[in-house]
Length: 288
Image (cartoon, rainbow, N blue to C red; front, top):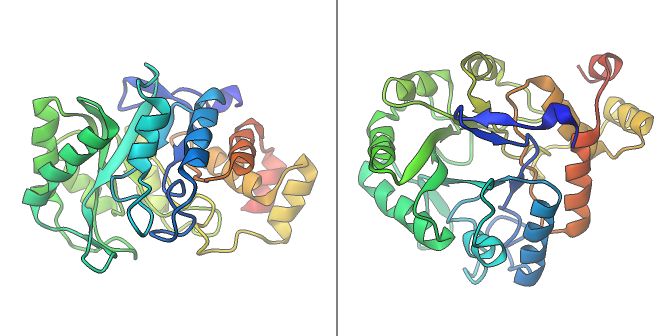
């Protein structure tokens, strides 16, 4: 990775590379779909660490549709005992429904068991970073208070079960409310080259030294990142369009952390290599 993309101080005390790894694709290619080969998943995780990844983003609800392959279990099986510099982030809020779907809880009492599940399945005594994820699959729920739920996580932080707190799928008002309760180390929102509609929150985070961690940094299969301008820059660098999309994220703001996910060793190598691409001012002008 380029030296420019190393050592973001997460929470002020955890220096991590700005190119990390998202574990959602390890159990299944499509969210809650058919199970992938767990041995391949473990191999991807080991190779990610070999390539310098020291930030893995996961969740206890990242599972295959039949529940037989789970991201947290793969991480523990592949990497435990964990390298001293490895930061594992997880998120709580969503829970599986009886029909196999996912729904976000609004009951603060649900959060402690979720945190305890992550502690157990990852095999740790303290979680490095826990995001409170709110809302469903769409945009952040406007006007919804996060205070009661964030207070639960803040109390668990005081107990020593969590090192740093984050928020996911939120707006600037949610962040402001949470920061009156406890420090926020990271925000994880839907943002990528084809979805740039979060400039206010990104700027607030940058000014406060809060990491901004886009989920679906390559579109998540929901957006098409291809186009003449992206292809032009990719050709100029001898790179792929996804690599340029990741490089654009990293160049957009110094507090952006990329967590592309994959269950493929080849795609992993490609994603990590994007951290070595330094876009020029001309490139950024083309991609603006």
